[in-house]
Image (cartoon, rainbow over all chains, first blue to last red; front, side, top):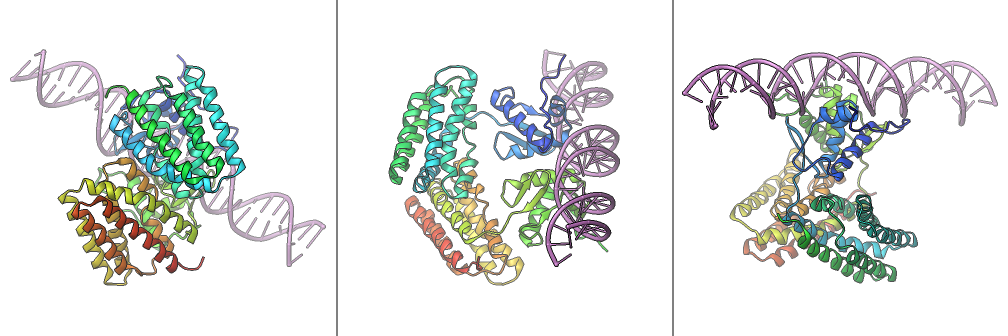
Length: 228
Length: 228
DNA sequence: CATTCTAAAATCCTATAGGATTTGCGAGGG
DNA sequence: CCCTCGCAAATCCTATAGGATTTTAGAATG
């Protein structure tokens, strides 16, 4: 009987807790750790063949992402699945924050930003093709990258912090459990609309396009979501 | 030579890392730990008379508040002081988020919320009286409580998360280093304006009053801030 | 069969130890 | 005087051990 997994030990220069963090994050995204399941400190330490100390540190960092919940003296559990209401609330919050980051980023637009945004849209198209799990992950990665690039280039670190507080696309993934890409065509077109407005240097139009995009994601996702 | 400090050991039922967290936070607020200073894991463990393990966990949690910065293999340092630009950015972000939380909280207004808001304003007035350090802390606590109450009662956990990502009033304290209360009278009047609009059940007016308040705080604080 | 109690296993939490890395400092050479 | 080198101290990082608490499983009882 072989051990289920094992972190790749770096030559050095990297801290073990970072790898443990990534490993747990992967388990959460893959669905190996289901919502509500306990994430035992000693247990994952055994699984990953490390001591409990770095696991403890990784979980402490993971807590503020909202993916795991800590209860004193009882350990960590995977956060429960999103309800439709949770998801609607998340999208409402994004409707407040993202149009602003978009407008700000548009005002500070650079060729480098345009190129990276263009690339993320290309990746989005490529990932749409197949229905495989890996491609679904690529799709979400490209989607997340588009929104994150805009937040990072807003020029306001606190707007980026607010965006990050919403948990990025991770939460979106957990809602659907990786069942498939249902709104790829719409999302690509909407990303392109935002991109064109930024390219033209029209901040208000860019903000409006982002509002439109997030609003439509909200609507589509709630329709497609599995029954509560 | 006596030890500089020592955490109060609880009867039990509370985890040591929580107390270490509070203790370090206090040190940061008091200014005992100056910006840029190193926060040694082993060192603070000795100071607080605990083992490094809970200190490590407390610092991992503190990192996402932005008060300390971690560099792999080099430990944690107190985050650098805010520049005027940083502070302006923080207020700009609050201008995006807080009017929305205010409007939402107003729509869900309850007698209990009104009472707590009223109390926070009363505490603000009481703390204004004296120039002592403790009263300055009370002042900031009451101020923070007012804004936090509104965010908590917005009904949208993600808006609260976005608000919390901004670091609350902690950052504000660090800007001035506890020199004194310069805008108490203004702030009290503005809080009361927000309160009245909520009490009347006028969400738009409440949002506008909050916009006005944060905007004025932005303006006053940048004027009063020490030279960069 | 349901319930309660008890004991054992699992888990969390803290402390300690030691290896790996970085930092500080003083000597020596240019 | 300045720079480099090398050793020692401090610090970070990980592992291990053991006490405290929670959970689980099974026996005993109604």
